Image 1 (cartoon, rainbow, N blue to C red):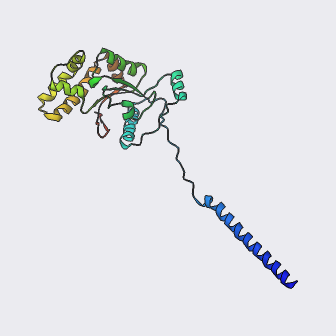
Image 2: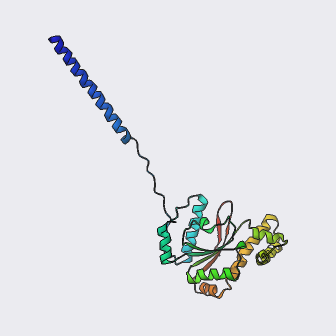
Length: 248
């Protein structure tokens, strides 16, 4: 009887020990997920701006900040959803700047300035020159849409400028673009520029010539005179992605 009682006691103790070990193992397994920190995923920021941008300074700052994001590769998520499209359709557009730039596929203004739907009113034509139709688009933007800033954006390695500097035949209506740029190319040559520097000098002169032509518009002239509009020249650098502004 005593041997049987001792055996039963030993068995009971063994069962209790095994139960405690099993319980400890379960507790360890349960604590593992809690001991590991769950990584925090930051929500992607969506670009927003004030609905109304009244001053040219504020508008220019938005473009500069957007270009800095673009250059650094830190562009913000743009709201391109149906709700945003519906809102713009219902309430109308309120762009804060007009941008006249070249048709070159490497110069997409919305990307360069990290802007989205309804933010900038873009007019694109090869060589960033103006004719009556392009000028009418600009006048609509600055007068009807009341944008406080107009940017004339040229770029380096412009094909239209290079073709004008090099001369030769310009087939079809391309000749009309060349004729617009030619005075700037002649001015750059007269200044003594050579090689690649000649092309870039001609591009710079072409930006200034385009601004001078736009300023002859009675609509634009009046808005500038009243302080409702500022015109700024700018140049896009293809490799770096940077836009340099001529704020004078």
